[in-house]
Length: 179
Image 1 (cartoon, rainbow, N blue to C red):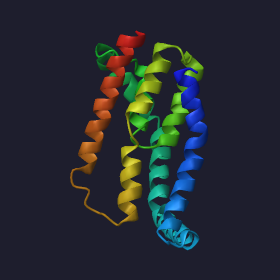
Image 2 (image 1 turned 90 degrees about the vertical axis):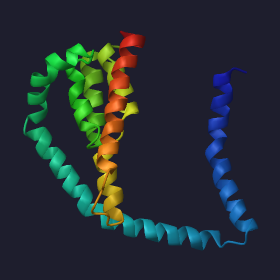
Image 3 (image 1 turned 135 degrees about the vertical axis):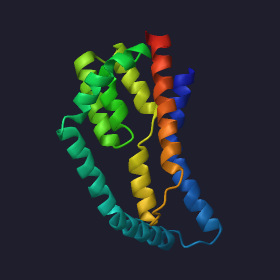
Image 4 (image 1 turned 180 degrees about the vertical axis):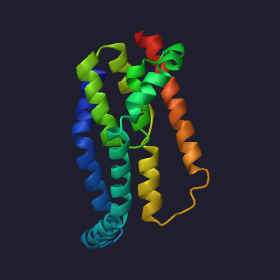
């Protein structure tokens, strides 16, 4: 059997075995598994209700940003600079949207794939970029909002620095491997 075949077999059973293991561990430790699960689900629902205002604010801001045409304007201005680092201007909207919204970034990624093809340099770079960066502002808004943290200190700067590092690495690696 090949490595891929072995991994496929493991992936079929991994989650059911993990769930069964968690339940068995709870039973062995005499934990009321169902009651604890329901209590956790109740807390999760409460958290979800508490973060709704933060999600709505984030989605409205993203909608305004996209509808205003700001992304297209930024692509036109930054294209000469981006070409010097090997980044096609077409992937800039993805680079801008990714820290804001995973769903918005995935929409841009799909559009790039349809327009340029999945096997094009732009398609491969966009896919690599999408996997190498994080939805920083979304994560900060949701998780910090859920626990009522108002002062983010260095979290925004650290998250954006990590996004820039992932973005530049994606451009570099994509140009080496696929360019």
